[in-house]
Length: 55
Image (cartoon, rainbow, N blue to C red; front, side, top):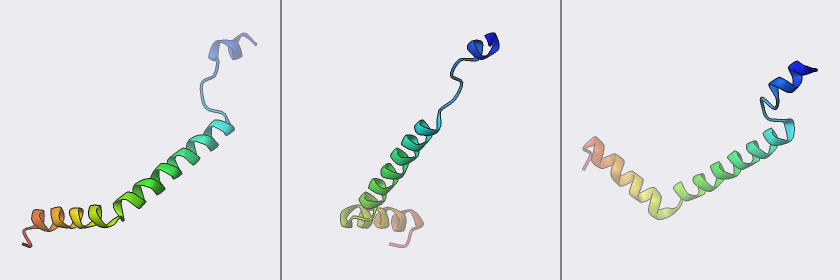
């Protein structure tokens, strides 16, 4: 029993994993929506074509 108390909470529980996963997925979806928006998409395309010297 002393060993269990000494270790304490060393990791996340299943509920914490679920909340963390949900937050990561939500962040990813928001980031995807931002990147796929018109102004950001054209800006990224401009940066990439400029970097590759296609202009």
